[in-house]
Amino acid sequence: MEKGTADHPISSACAKRMRAIDDTLDILSGKWKLAIIARLCHQPMRYSTLLRDVTGIAGKVLSRELQDLEMNGLITRAVSTSKPLAVTYSISENGKSLKALTDSIADWGLQHRARIIQAAD
Image (cartoon, rainbow, N blue to C red; front, side):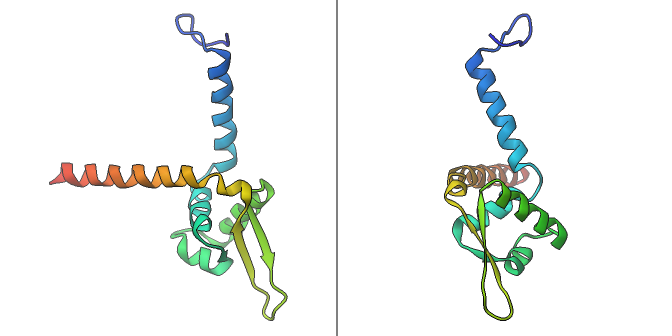
C-alpha cells in the first residue's frame, strides 16, 4: 500500500495510475497542447494554418508548444524543399493514440455546453 490518509491507504495499482496521470498531464500541460493535437489528429497543418486556427495563441507560444510536442514524439515536422519553405506538422503514430482522449474531451464539452444552455433557459 502507498501512503494515503490513515483511513484510506492508496493501493500500489492506484498509486501507479495516479503517477501515470501526473506524467500525462506534465506532457500535455498548458492551455494549447491538446488544442494543437486535436487539430492535427484530423489533418496535417502548416504552421500558419495552426496559428490562425488555434484562436488566441501567440506565434512564439505556438512555436514552443510544437517543439515540446515534437520532442515528446507526439507530432512530426516536415520541411518542404520548395521556395518558400513550408513547414507542415502531422500527428505521429504515438500521437494518434490521443485521438480517443480528444474525442472524449470534445464529447464532454458538447454535453456540458448543452446542460449550461438548457439550465439558462
